[in-house]
Image (cartoon, rainbow, N blue to C red):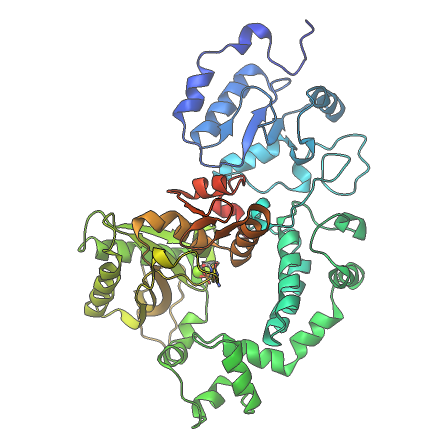
Length: 500
Ligand code: DCT
Ligand code: MG
């Protein structure tokens, strides 16, 4: 039989040390399966790189199959490589990344698979595509964010920033449909691994209707969109944006204040007719701190603080960072945590214990505790709403700056050695943990599409508490997020790929 130049010779294929190596290492990046092309790389370098990648949690297959998502080659002429690949008749070639070793090296340095960029691809020689896509036909992009992998590496920021302004402006106008249309369009473009260069590039992409296309077209031509410019200059938009930046102030309240003729935060505070609720009072009081973004270092400092505090409650209470920071974000507007106690029913007391401890430590600036309204008997709810029924609290904590929070600039006129930080804690019963974690990890758009996908494609209802199968008239249980994806018939998407 003729041996393909890219496969290791038959004699070498049965390397007993390869299989155990794969089993021993933990796989951290579920959606990524590598195959390293031996030809030109050489077997010893391939072995070395395979071992390195596995030690960092990458899944590396020795044999090329349809399970492979990323093929990595070093120094192979594109034509030779592609004709060899085509001989394999792999399923779903459109979704296969054929990559230069640079992508691998960068991923090893980052300790995770970096987003694939145009420069990483080994282009199919006959391809006349202007994009970075490797196949002659474009890969199908799903209309659901939960079937796309969206990292923080947004290659289409110029377009998505414009859509986000348009979405927000429609939200202020209470135009939900329009708002969602712009959010969906932004989400699709964020998932692309290439930058749009012409209108040809958006052909076949979902969620990009005529209105969206005309915005993209205008940006191609003028690098800006006149409607967006107009919104950004609009006094009402600017004022509503300012008012909603206060903790506890939503679009409805902001609109009410605007209608009263108020234009500044100072004017709101000076207005005798306005009665702020407790949350808004705290929002104004700590505005200077909490309107600024929270860094990853701050989030870690808060994590340490909570960990230390719960150790006084019980040694088996678990604390997990969730929300944007779990998705790998460097900054957020708050820090979100999930806490669970192994003993079901102890969650509520845990949050009250923590709040009390923070008070005693003198670091509790604000607390809104919401007790559990969770009742499995009442599920599935007809209204599978976004807000869950678990005990939770929205806090503002005093975080000591200085050593704990690297990078914080001390204001010369401000002698404080602390800053106010927004922290959310939710404590689901242990058997609901996976659903709560999936819901709180976000992003909001990812969650929206997970629910829409479950409902429309699977006749299932998903929320932060449970998954209900309407065909079987039964709840489907899951202990991990992976199991939930599995029950939905979805490929697992890692948290850092949920930045939809
Ligand atoms: N969430 C949701 N539906 C909502 C609000 C929130 O599913 N209506 C989920 C998604 C994210 C998670 O809860 C935490 O919420 P945020 O802190 O608002 O989001 P974030 O992604 O953590 O954003 P940020 O980094 O700005 O805190
Ligand atoms: Mg958050």
